[in-house]
Amino acid sequence: MLVFRDGRDPVAGRERLQELAGFLHRLSRPDPPDPVLLLDALLRAGELECALADAGAGRSQARMMSVTDALAHALVRGDDVGCGPETLSALEVPLLIEVSPPEGFAYYGLHPQNYADLAGRLVRGATAVIGIRSIGTTLSAVVAAELRRIGVPATRITVRPEGHPFDRRTGFDPGSRAWVEAECYTDSDFWVVDEGPGLSGSSFLATGEALEHAGVQRDRIRFLTSVDPQPQKLCARDAAARWSRFQAHAVAPPWRRPAEAAIDLSGGKWRGIAFRPDGERPESWTQFERLKFLAPDRRRLYKFEGLGRFGAEVAERAAAIAEAGFGVPPRAECDGFYSYPVIAGEPATAASADRHVLERMAAYCAFRSTAFRRGPDGQAQLERMMAWNYFEEFGEELAPGAAILPVQRPVIVDGRMQPHEWISGTWLLKTDGAGHGNDHFFPGPTDIAWDLAGAIVEWRLSPDAADYLLERYQVFSRDNARSRIEAYRLAYTLFRMGYCKMAAEAMRGTEEEASLRRAYLAYRGLAQLLTRRAAAA
Figure 1 (cartoon, rainbow, N blue to C red):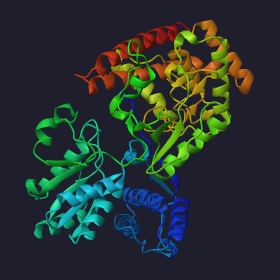
Figure 2: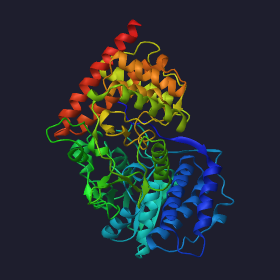
Figure 3: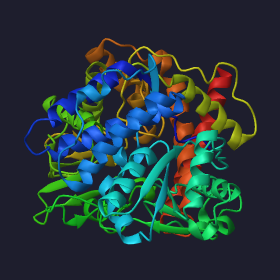
Figure 4: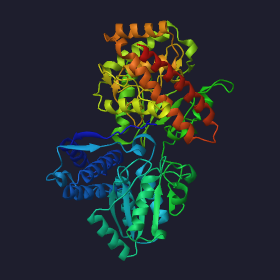
C-alpha cells in the first residue's frame, strides 16, 4: 500500500543559499549565538549539503560540508560559529535543488543533540561516521563534532541508499571507497547514522553490508538509531537475521522537551484523557504520533510541531486558524515544541452532525481554501496512490478516468477531519489542523475537496447532509466542489484503507491492531461501493 508520499520538492538553490547566508550573518555578531538561530541554521546547512551531494556537485558539496561542520561544532560546544556569510559568497549551486523534510526534526521530536549525547557514551577510538541522507547529513555532522570536541579523531561522509524502500542498496563512489579504505587502514570504527530504522531497516542494512563488502570488519560497524527496533517486525528481506549481525544503539529517552511538559499523551495516551473509559476510541498508528504532553495543571497542551522553520510554518498556520476563530493560538516554547490552551468541551461525534456543525465545517473549509493556497506539487503521486492501492487490494485496475483528481482550489489541507478532531462546546473548534496537511503522509498539498470529502466520509454524512455541506461551502467560498467531490471521496477512502491496513500490520500483537483492522474493513467496503457507483455513472 502507498501511504507515505515522496516529499522531495524542487526549490531555488540560490534562494536557499541566501537564506542560510542571512542566518550566518546574524550568528556572526559578537554576542553569544542564539541557540534557536543556531539550530535553524544547522538544519538549513545540512539540507543544502544533502541536496548538493545528491546533485553530484562535488566541490560545492565539500565546501558546504565545512559550513555544516562549523555549525555542528558551535552547537555541541556552545560557542561561536567560526564562519560568516562570506563563506558562501562564491559557492556555486544548481538553479534548482531537491530537498525533503528531515522527518525526525520536522515531525517526531528528534534533536541533533540526542546523537551527540549518544556518541559521547559509545566512543572507543578513531571513528569514521557515515550519514544516511537526508537527515543523516546533519546527524553525522553533529556526531563527528561531538567526537572531535572530546578529542577523538573523526571524519565523515554521507551516502544515499537507492531502490525499493524495503530493499535498499548502497554503493560507494570512488572517493567514498577510498575514504573507507583509508579509515580501515587506521583501524577506525565505522558508525552509520540515521533516524529510524523505520518500517524496513533497509537503509541501515544496505549501508552496513556495503561496508562489509568494502572490507570493514563487522565488529567495527555500529548503527546509531533514534529508536530500538524490533528486528522481527522489520519489512526488509531477512531483516531479523541481517540486523542481528550488527551492533545497534539508540538515543536514550527522554527526548528534549519543555520543563512544563509533564504528563505524556504521546502514542495514543491522549485518548485516556479525551474519552470516557467506556466510550469508543478512535484508532491510532501510535508509532507515528507526534510527541504531546500536558502541563501539571492540565491547562496547556505541549506538542512537538518541528524544529526551526518546520515548526515555525506549522505555528503560522495554527495562528491563522485561531485568528479566524476556528482554533486556539499557539505559543512558542523550546526545542520545536509549541503549547496551546486546553479547550473546555468534548470530542464531537458523527451523531452530532446537525446543520450548525455542517455550517461550521463548511466555513472552515472555505477559510482554508483561501488562507493556505499552495500549488498541488504532488498531484500525480496522489493519483498514483489511488490506482496502486485499489489494484493491490482488489486485484483489478480502476475504471479509466477514476484516478483523475481535478484541482481548482489547491491548498495545504487539514487532513484530519474526523469528528474527534473537533471539540464540541460553546463553539465547534478544530484541533490539530496545522501540522498534517504537508507532512510525509498523503495527500500533501491538493484541492480543498480532500477535506470536504474527508468530512463526508468520517462523519458518515447522508446524501442530504453532504449536499448541505457542499452548498454552504459554495456560499462561503464561491467554489462549487460538487463536480469533483466523488473523485476525492474515493481518493480519501483508498488512502485511509491503505493507511489502516498497513498500520494494523505494523501494530500486530498490540491492542491497537483490532481497531485498526475494523477501520480498514470499513474503508474497504466504502471503496468498493464508491467504485461501483463510479462505474455505473
